[in-house]
Amino acid sequence: MSDKGALSGITVLDLSRLLPGPYCSMILADHGARVIAVEDKRFFDDGLFMDMVYRNKEHMTLDLKAEEGKEIFFHLVEEADVVIEQFRPGVVRKLGVDYESVKKVNPKIIYCSITGYGQTGPYRDRVGHDVNYLSIAGVLDLFGEKDRPPSIPGIQIADIASGGMNAAIGILLALQAMQRTGKGQYIDISMTDGSAGFLPVPLFYYRLLGVSPERSDFMLAHRYAFYNTYETADGRFLSICAVENRFWKTLCEKFGVPDYGGLQYDEPRRVEILDFMRAEFKKKTLSDWMEELGELDICWAPIQTLTEAMQDPHLREREMMVDVEDPEGKQYTTLGVPIKLSETPGSLRTPPVHFGQSTEAVLMDFGYSREKIKEFVEKGVV
Image 1 (cartoon, helix red, strand yellow):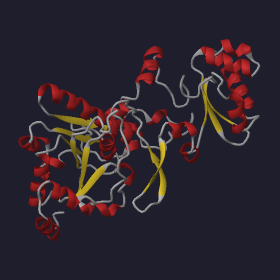
Image 2 (image 1 turned 90 degrees about the horizontal axis):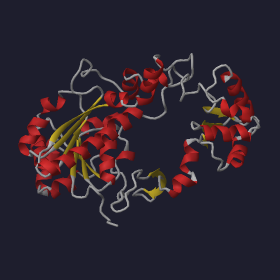
Image 3 (image 1 turned 45 degrees about the vertical axis):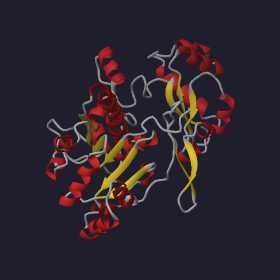
Image 4 (image 1 turned 90 degrees about the vertical axis):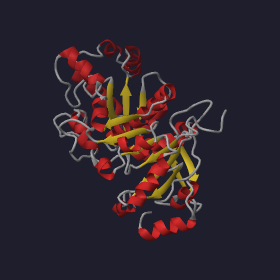
C-alpha cells in the first residue's frame, strides 16, 4: 500500500469559497493533491470561512485585482494542473484570470468553473443558493409531506453533490483525458444541472404512469407501507425500505399478517396496511425495535440524530467519524474519507488551515523572498 494518495503530484489552485468548490478540492486534497486555496482577504469578514473543508490544504490570501496579485497568480499557474473557481459568470474574465488567459500561460491546465446555473442559458446571471437550484430542477417539490409546503433538507445537497462532487468527477475525467491527449480543458459545472441529474427514478415513473410524481405520494416516497418512516412509542422514528417482496414478506410475517405480503402495491387496501404498520411500530420504543429487528432481512434502520451518528459503531469502524486534535490539542470529531482505495487510500494528513495561514510558506515555495513578501503585505497584495 502506498502512503501517497492517488492524486499525489497534482497541484490545484482553488479560487472558490463557501462550500461547493472547497468541498471539491477537499476530495482532491484527501487523495494526495496539493491544494492551495487562494482568497481575497476582503471577503473574510463575512464569517463564512468553513474550516471543516480546509483539511489537507494550504491557504493563502491574494488580491487578484492588484496587478502584482495577478502576476503572483500566473506564476502559481505555471506549475499547477487544475484551477477551480466559483465566481458568477464573467467575473474571472473581468479579473483577467479566466480560462483563455490561464491556458496561454499553461496550455495543459484543467480549469473548472462551478456556478448555480452554468455559463450559458437564460438563468446564468441569476444569484442563488442550494435550495434555489433544487427548486428549479424539480427536486425540492418532492421533499416533505403531502399537502404541505416543500421541506428544505437539512444538508446542502446541490452544493455538495451537484456542485462539489460533480466538479471533482469532472476534474478527474479531464485529468485522465489530459494524460491521453496532452490537452487541458474547461469544465462548466452547474449546480442546477447536477440537481436535475437526481431525477432518474421520478422520470422513470413519469414515463411509466404518465403523471408527475407528487410529494410524499409515489412509490419511493411514503405512498406504500413497504417504503416509509414510522414513529415509535418514544417519539423516535425508523425507516422501512422493503422494496423487494421477500423483505416485505418477512416483515409481514414478523407482525403476524402474512396475507399483507402479497399486497405490497395493493391500492384498495393501501391505507389499511399503512395504518396497521403505523400502529404496530408505535407500540414499542426505538431501542426496543433495534433489539427486536436486529439483523432481520427487511431493510430497516433507526433514524439517528447527528450526535448518534457521530458515535455509531459502524461509522466509527469505517472511519467515517474520527476523533482528531486541533493545533491547540483540543479533540473533536470530524468526517473521514468516504472513498476507500486499497492501494492509494485517501487520508487526513493535516488539520484545517486558518484563513491565510500558508501565504508566506506558499510564496517562499514558489521562489519569493521574505523581503518581497513583506513588500506584498505592505501593499495589500497578500
